[in-house]
Length: 471
Length: 48
Image (cartoon, rainbow over all chains, first blue to last red; front, top):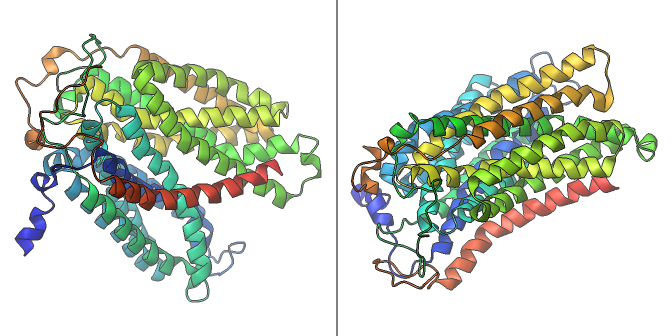
C-alpha cells in the first residue's frame, strides 16, 4: 500500500494520458499559488499578534510581542522562500511537480499548525519555526513547482501560462486577508484575538485546497507538442533551442544580469508598497477634499489605495507577462524599467502638488509593471536557458527576491526616517525613496540591456531527458 | 502556422475533458473572484 501510494506521486505516474486537456494545468498551478500567496497578507495578523496578552491592540502589555518581533516572521518566510526554491529546484525537476506540490502543501499547511502552537504557548520561536521556516520552505517549493511544467505544456504561450500561475500569488493575499479577518472575528471569544484557531483552520484549508493542484497536475510526454504548433523557424538569438543545466546557468553572466534585474524590480516595488498608505494619506490631506477628512477616513482611503495596488499587481502579472509573448522578454523589461524610471521620478512631484488622480494612475501603472517583472522571469529564463531545468534555474533566481525582501524595507525606512529627521513631512518625506528607486530601475534597465544569448559552451551536449534533470 | 500532425502519445492540447476544465477553473476562480471583490470594495474607500 505504501509502495502504491508513493508511486502515485512519481513523475512517471503523472505523464498525461490521451484526452488530458492542457488547460487543466493552469488551474492546478493556481491552486498552489493562490494558497501560498497568503504570505503577502501576513500583516493582517500584526495587530492581533501584538495583543495576545493585553487583549487590546491599542494598549499592548509589556510581555506582548513587538511589531518588529512579529515582522521578523514574514522576513524569515521570504528568506526561506528564496533559499528553498534554490536548494530544492533540481530535486523538483527530478521528481516532478506532483511530489513537489505535495511537499509544499505539507510544509505550508504544517507551518500554520506549528505556528498556531507557538501562538497558543506565546512562544515566538515556535512561530518563527512554524510559519517562517517550515511555511517558508513550502512557499519556495510551491512557487517554482508548476513553472517548468507550464512552460512544457505551453511552448507557444509561455508568458500567458506562467503569468496565470504567478498572478495567483498576487491573488492569494486578496483571499488570505479577508479570510483571516473573518476567522479571527469568529474565534475571538474562544482564544486571545482568535489567532491560534485561525491558524489551525487556515492550515487545514490550505492543505486541502492545494491537494487539487497535487492530483490534477500532469506533465506532457517528452515528444508532446500542442496541436498545430510549429516552432518558429525565424532565428532569434534570444530564444534558444538548446538546454543549459541549473549548475551551468549560474556560471553565465546572463543569469546574474537577470538576478540584478529581479532584485531592482522587487526592491523598487517594495518602495511603493511600503509607503503606499501613509503617502496617499499625505497626498489626500493636501487636496481640498482631504482638508475636511478625519483620521479614520484618511486611514480607510490608505487601505483602499493598498487594495487598489493589489488589484493592479495581480492584473499586471497576467497582462505584462502575456504581452511579453508578443513583445519579447527583453523589450518587455525595457518597458518596465524605462517607463518605470519616468513614473517613479514623476510621482513625488504629483504628490507634492496634490495631483491625486494622476498620482493614483502613476502608482497603479508602476505596480502593474512590478507584477509583470515577477511573472515574466520564468519565460525569460526559458528563452535563454531552454526548458530542461528552468524550474531549478528560476528557483535560484528567486534568491534575488529574498535579498530584496530584506533590503527593500530597510532602504525605504532609512530614507524616509532621514527625511523626517531633516524636518520634512507629508509626501515630501518619501521623495528620496522614489528617486532612489528610480535610480535602481536605471541599474535594472542597463542590466537587462546587456543580456545577450548564452554562450554555446554552457549548452548540454546531446539530448537531455527530464528524468535526468536532477542528476 | 501550418497544422502539423501530433506525433505524441498524448492527445491534442485542447481536446477532451471540457467539463473538467470548466470545473477546475471554477474551483480556483470562485475563491479568486471572492478575494478580488473584497479588495475592490475596500479600494472604493479611496474614491469616496
